[in-house]
Length: 230
Image (cartoon, rainbow, N blue to C red; front, side, top):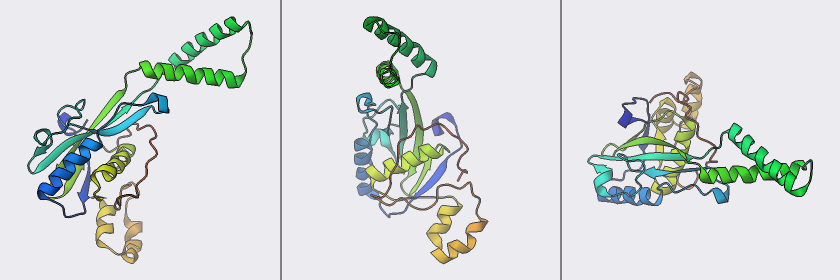
């Protein structure tokens, strides 16, 4: 998805801190390494994972200066892996397990609570056998200008990226759409005066402060078109 595939849809962010040079390069390398994507832990009840991967090969999570920095750019990808079991497949396997258990216990029916527990057991077993779907979004960071382009308009992907970026890069990002630009230049009274003039579809305004972002990792459908192109 994104720059590698000649996609021109992206959301633009501005890094609000004035950090550059070797300090910034080491911070990026360290943050990407610590925040790289990890395998999905089904045993903990997870069915998806978020994290950073390399730009040229999203399956690669070993970061070096050579595969990140192409001065003045830093390039990488934000990856979302998700496991899913098709509903029809789950029903077939659950029905078979239910029949086997009833036959083994000489019963004709099973309490609803036990059926639900059985269905969840089957779902987890199938998740452990499944390959995740992989969604990798290109990220292009102009370090000289402090501008980041995130090559997806998906609201959920942008939210997940902001939280992960904040958590591991420890820098504030401001969306460069009309909301973000106005909030960076107007005081609260002035914003209230012009707020009614803004399109309601600009969803990513304001800044993400270090330590304040939260994100409930719901499934990240690729809901393109939710955010206006910056």
